[in-house]
Image (cartoon, rainbow, N blue to C red; front, side):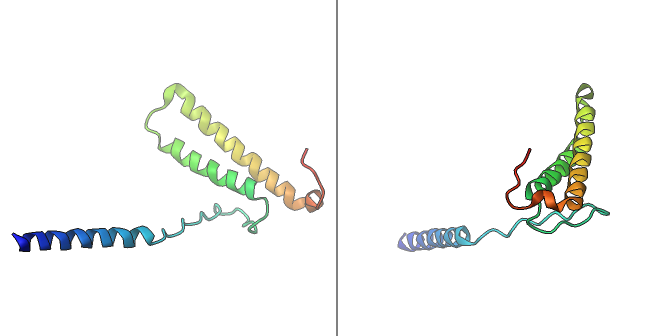
Length: 110
């Protein structure tokens, strides 16, 4: 009887120790998403919100393409609008590269 209690206590201690050790192990960083093929690579820190929006729209496009149901045409319409928004963001980034003076210190957004 004492031996069974000792083994049970040892097993419980091992489980608690393992749980404590794995809780302290940091999670690996999320993989970065490379820019689409053919698109110019932006320097980190330049237009971060525009680049984040571009990545989010790319993810949304993939999810809409994977959707199993057509939702009475609303999925297709949403996909069309996402692609339109992606094009607008790319056009905006191209404009920003051609007009760096617009991003000088002290400039305010319209």
